Image (tube, rainbow, N blue to C red; front, top):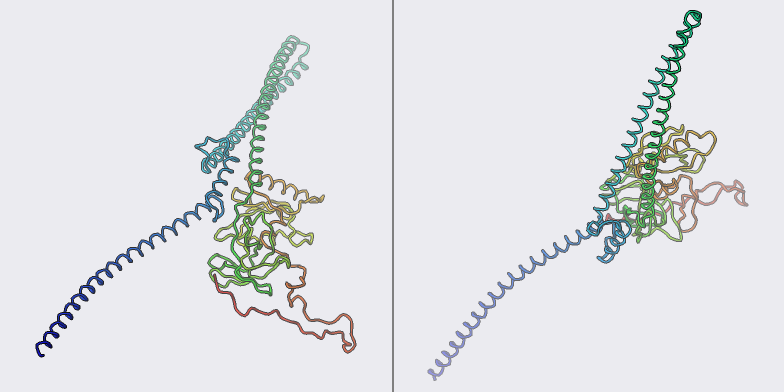
Length: 471
């Protein structure tokens, strides 16, 4: 019996040792496979990170190329190809297919403008040289005529004093006079011929210059008639409160200041210059790097300002000063008086620069250059005592055409800038404010109120419970 128990114990021990060896082998194999899996997962994670970085860089490159090309950031390759084909058909049809690209066309336009400017300069120099030569010839002719007249007068006096004894000398003097007159006539005829030739050259050069100006005007007209203006919105509305307060995603980091005004456009606006506006706002507080509070200065109850709408200013641009010129009678508030100083202060307040303006005395202050963005046209001076203002208007308009500066009316300029005059119409309905209806005396005394004073107190608009967080 003891032998059988020892034999069972040995069998149990053998089975236990066998199971221990099997478990140890399986543990070793599992640990080895687990280590290899961790290494493989780490490699896959690193590869996935690199792929994400490459995808992010590719997306950034795509958006940069879309911005440089002037197409939408979400346009696909077919849309960009269609825009390119339309541009090449319109602007590059005369170019060799190998040269049909934006850089080649811009380079050709630049070279042609340089040639036109060089020809214009050469023509002016030739005209100046011709005038100087003509003046020199006329001066010399006048001197010779003066000398001849002096000689004739002296000869006549001598002849009168010695007529009797010097008759022969008189005849000789007459002959000399005739010869001199013939020389003068011949020289005069030669001068007239030269003047005619020079005038013909001047006319030809003037015609050529006029054709060049016409070509430039046609090019500027094509630019103005372009389908898009390449202007982009400056920011977006982040939040709107019912009391007429809005918050936008621009702030101190964007060099934004109080009292800057913006026009408001729909969220899906593609061209802020050509698309209609739905209202305007004025910045009242700067709350953060990219957060500012503003009040609604103009709104449409049928098409209210909503979160996500875009804001745009004709004057203020993030990190960039735009240049403007003002001419005509600038009447901002419609009271019939000049508001030139107010318009200049508005442009300066909104971060712009006034290169030139027409003073109330008709004097052009400053100079329009190729860097001037717009010439803002006020009311044309048509009254009889505004002759100097009309001359200044004409001069600044010609300078704008010469430098390729686009013109814009005062009303459109103020509308796109989002500016509204101080005098305004009190709105009724959802856009009304309690502050627009202050408490005051009744017009007519009522029973129980013989003094004619209102029984109501002034109400204040409800302030927002919290300011939206910066986005």
